[in-house]
Length: 166
Image (tube, rainbow, N blue to C red):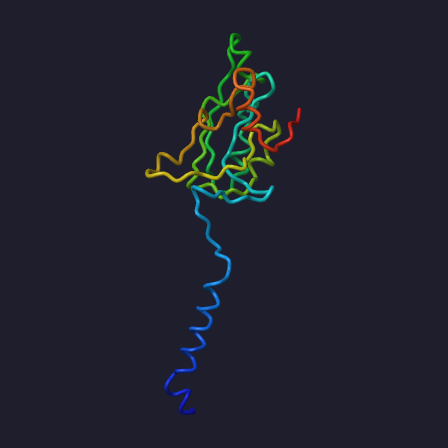
């Protein structure tokens, strides 16, 4: 080892030069509340339960999304539609209870692909932070998009870039 290598001065100077170079590079972080990061078109965010154009729920509680979920994050219970509830549900069966545990969800999109009625899809919205575990279990009321007749602007906003299929 040479005298210059023994006192580590050369290595310290090389490290300082790297640090000095990074001071003038573009920062990788953003100031979140003021700036929003743009996501790609294939980003998978929060689950959404879809409605048809008349406002009826598309979910028929077939359970394919729960079966396809590798993390077992989706739980549902089916119920029979009553005759006076035809304006609420499209089919004779509906999901009386539909919950997604976002702590278990791995955002793989298999639930979206498994749904034959296009009732479940993953939106462009990311999961917000929360203080308790209960806040990460989204119930059916939290996941349903707004009614298209009562709130058409909210319905279009909730649908996002997703193309409607019939």
